[in-house]
Image 1: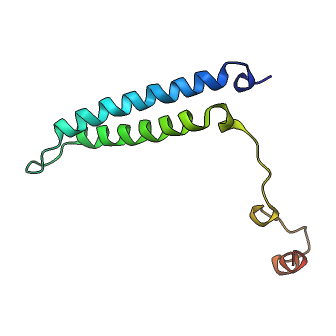
Image 2: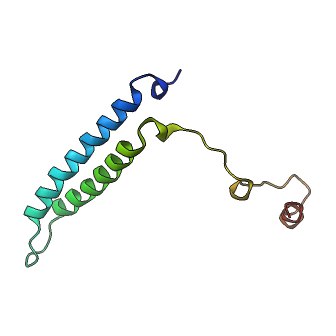
Image 3: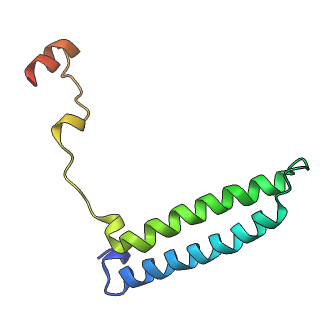
Length: 98
């Protein structure tokens, strides 16, 4: 059994998502305080913006999806990669799919 299939994994992942959202809120406050339209932005401001975006995106995803982040889905044939067998061209294989 993988760790994400355990009983409390969904709640733990959602809690981690909320923690990342709280971090994003704090980073946003610092970023807002650092931003000065008249001054040239330093690399620290860009680093804060990057960390804010990553923590906000990951936090929202983990909070909304939880342990279902690891669910396997069936990929339609349209989106699968088809490798032609040896001796056949790609045109012959694509003609077989129609």
